[in-house]
View 1: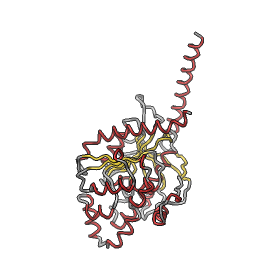
View 2 (view 1 turned 135 degrees about the horizontal axis):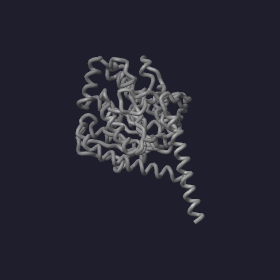
View 3 (view 1 turned 90 degrees about the vertical axis):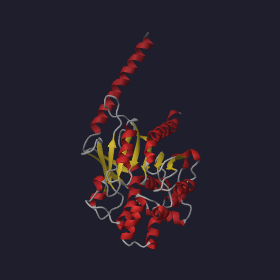
Length: 347
């Protein structure tokens, strides 16, 4: 009887302290809150050759501490905007404050939860509908999701679309922003630091494919409709890729000048640095924007096994019908990662 009373008393105390901690988190996580983050360093010693090392250096910066601030998510159903400085500057100051839409994980009562996080990188659509679909849907699985606004998009727009010359520079900035987003998210008090994942679709998937090879701080990476060999995508891809090709032609950008610029951000250049067990690629067999051969090219360069390269009988746009299946697959992999990463703490 005494043991039973003590057990009940312990449970009561646990509930009280948990409530106090949750209440404290609710006070900390509010508009205007600021947090300090620290950049993760890149290990250049893993480079296979001088060209890859030069590429890593080009996509890196001197690690430093930086401030992360919460702002109101006006005109959005997100809980907050997470703002932090981009590692590099462009010609547009409004573009150089990176932005994440934070969809916070909550319990049935609406209280914030200490849960894993997923950084979502959107497609080329200016209103980011697919990116928001992934962020909102994964958030319903009780993950903190963060939709990154790529350079020139959303809160980072300067009112006009970037020129083709600017676009190529901004993709480099995007890769660096995605890398820093890991540390920005990790510093938030209610994020499980043992499980922070990355997801991207189309343009976002291409950016994330390079990030996966440059460094491996994310615990899992989910790439939808992405691939390697950018030059062949620009040269042969249809729809969105063809539109970019026409813009480059209109700007009279010489392919001989374009080649070394594209090489700076080429996923296959860094693919040997991919930790294949952490990466999943979802490809459309009939995709004409990111052709299947480009997906296979990256999968081979990154040493992805068949279970990590999922093929869908779809094109670049009809693949949306498989999103429920993909969401379930992502959830299962996240659960496996959480279980695996928690094992050392149980010893």
